[in-house]
Length: 159
Image 1 (cartoon, helix red, strand yellow):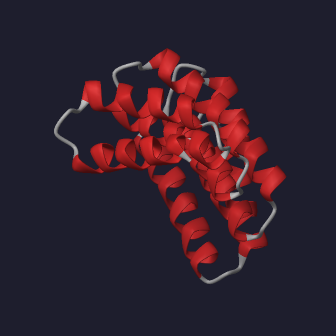
Image 2 (cartoon, rainbow, N blue to C red):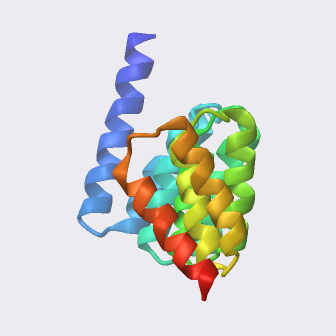
């Protein structure tokens, strides 16, 4: 077991260093070797997704996040990163859908509500954004960023 873990760590590290050297195709080979050895190790889908992001292959990167989400639909880590990437791509409607899935899994996560509010605001859906940020405030009432976001949402509603 220790040998297998050490081998996976070496593959991960080699892939990471190749990625840092902008040798993306070679990095992908390393991550795919690890996935072939253990398709249930979701971290390698994450590494592959990040590498494909750096290569500007967004649809392929999103597909890698989806693979991890399908293999463990109750894990939030991969879906959270997928939603962040969707926001980065200005695909806010899809990001809202992912945040809804995350909130269904962990309704107490105020950061999920905050990110949902940001995407809703980007979509011009200010009433829904206000409801989402109010949920974040309910869960974390002392966060000044959430209070500021609420004030901004109220101003946008008045326009």
